[in-house]
View 1 (cartoon, each protein chain N blue to C red):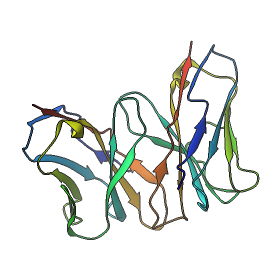
View 2 (cartoon, chains in turn red, green; view 1 turned 60 degrees about the vertical axis):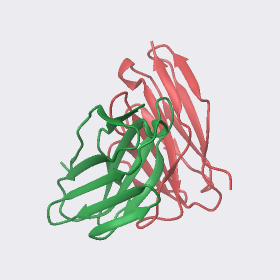
View 3 (cartoon, chains in turn orange, red; view 1 turned 120 degrees about the horizontal axis):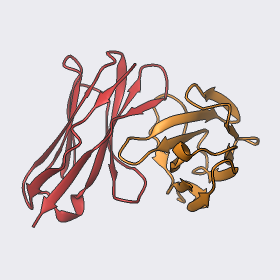
Length: 114
Length: 111
């Protein structure tokens, strides 16, 4: 069974530029998560989708971050405009459903904002 | 604010010894607990989940949960150099699926 796919793996941009990350979850997984992991910290949830609906986006900086999951499968996370403090690894995870299911992570996208 | 606390380490153990990793959490309604292993430059990998008080064993790994003390631990028996990684504790609050992660404990297994 294929795991969670993410692209690109690495991205370097200048501050104030925009960037987009893509995620394809494990086949059949209804729930998709985007996490931000800053060096030396644990992952922090940005947004959770159940199928194509948002379940939790309480920690998403909505003035600059946006995410969508239009057909209930793959998802895109966008940052516009980027700030230096957005430098982090952006992890996508998926699970079969909501509460009670284990989450599996993709390889992540390492973003450097200069 | 719900918190998950871990000692950042590094925790150094000799090869073949038992490594003990600890985690405390603040939210009493937390229902599910997970241990993820993260190698440097890689993404977190789920290694154990535990939902009820007591011990759960899987190969060389044992997870221990004490909800009254709000404490969860991971024991790694016969530690190997390949176990050297950062171990993340994650807690899911009751009724939802949001995970709150600790900052992780770095484990070093020395030859």
